[in-house]
Each structure stands twice: as structure tokens, then as C-alpha cells.
Amino acid sequence: MVLGFKIALIIFSLLLMLLVLMHKGKGGGLSDMFGGGMQSSVGGSSVAERNLDRITVVIGLLWVACIVALGVLM
Image 1 (cartoon, rainbow, N blue to C red):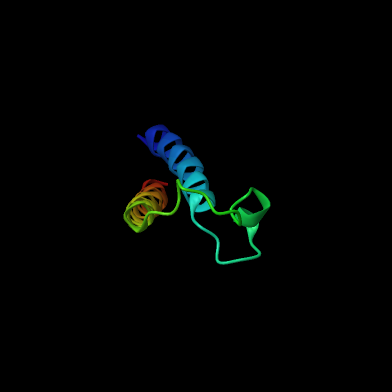
Image 2 (image 1 turned 90 degrees about the vertical axis):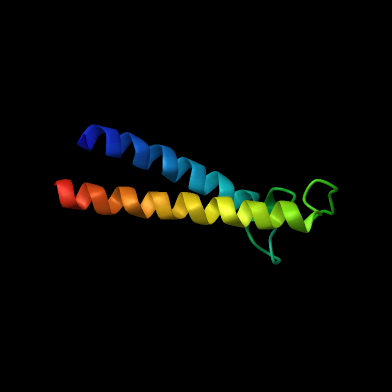
């Protein structure tokens, strides 16, 4: 059971990093380094931004739940 939570934690950690890097930058951040400062038609939709925010929050909560579960089990 502990191994399952460890694997889930690794997967959620990688997903969380990917989702945070996909967010539109407010200026001068890491997203500008990867071309986030350029205007693109893909990230222009506010619905897509809101969905990305929701997915990021859900993955973040699952990440925290895995950490708490591992703490309780160990």
C-alpha cells in the first residue's frame, strides 16, 4: 500500500510540475523563458485557463492527500 502511494506521489508531482509550467505567465517568469510571453491562439481562451486552474487545484489536492496518507502509514 505504501508503494502504491509512493508511485502515485511521483506521478502527481510530475503532473503538477507540467500543469504549473503550462499556466500563462504574469511576466518575467519561467513561462516567458519557454515562449509564454508570445501571443498564441492556443492559450487565449479564458475557458481553457479556468479549466487548467481547476485541474491544477485537483492534482494539487491529490498530491497533498498522498503526502498525508504516506505520513499516516509510515
